Image (tube, rainbow over all chains, first blue to last red; front, side, top):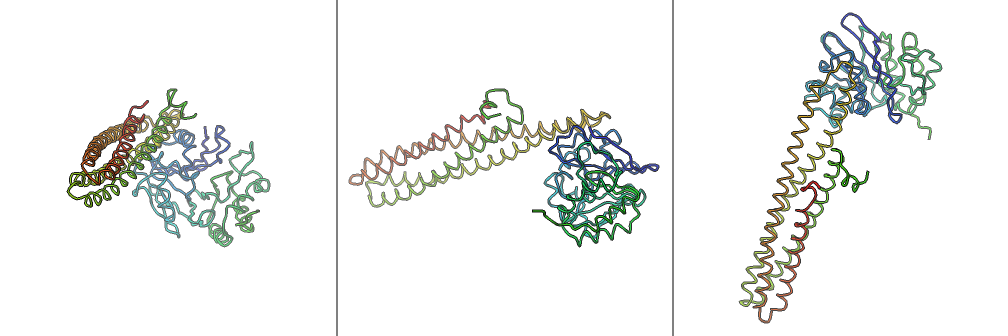
Length: 246
Length: 209
């Protein structure tokens, strides 16, 4: 079963990371899911693949009523991001799924109807969660051509999808990055190959450097916090991406 | 597990749905071959009509029967087209049932693992929906069987026409030999279709064995 860890809490506003399933088959990539709650509403960020749904559901339900989820945020179109969509919709068929306009006719192959999807324009949008404004931040071509991250200026949290992701070796399962230099080695190959554009990367680094971020939360690996956030942005800015070793 | 094993031991719902899908595919392939033969009857009947015209009054009855065989060919193609529509419906429903099975298994795991013991109502609603899909599939299965029976009766009528044409050919005087040959071919192809449909009516898709 996955564990939940509250990474931010202030009154009725909370961020919960759903992470690390020891029972997960090795052939599936490990994923982090994040739940943002505000008041009685909840939004699940990159809810994960259908195969990990039971683990994510059971962990989430210990913290929050799944039928009170009002929205899903899909950073991009990959199956590990949202192939569980149809299963979550069983709990609340009126739930909305926020996704780039580019993928809004692809993701319905995972489930949902025309009413389910809110297509986000390239420049991003403000999403209201029971009055809390969350910003969809453009991250196109990192690593998908239509890609968004989600910024919460109250919690100072940036959910960064695959940016910042690291493929950690077995046993290295801390929730937060503790030794940046050691950690970043596990992120380098992934970023070189999976991020498609140096120009897009440059723009993203400029954009997020202007945000006040305490935690940068990727979909794989560990969370960057404090000074490691800017350290990561600087490292990423200097990295040549879109390179295939072969 | 091989299909043979799946058929001889008690199959799981997913295995059963997989086997059903395979059986529907086989029915569809057989129907495609019947459509091909029906088209052949149409061409044969057209040639038979020309032959009857050349034979004149001696082959008037043969000409009428040849024309009826053309109508039969068209009716048969229409019947096969309706069967194809039902088969597509069955494929869709079996696919939905397969997806139901996977989703229900994942939902059940989720609910069983949930420490908050929530989701039972959603699981029950999903199971009720699965039952509705299974009922729809059962209805389609019944309709398909009915349509196959209708097609079989139509082909039996076609067989009567072909046999009557054989009798009429005997009165064809100097054209008796070519008319007999054509009517024999009619009889052969109609018998071929009859055997195909007979086999389809015995398909385990309908008997569930």
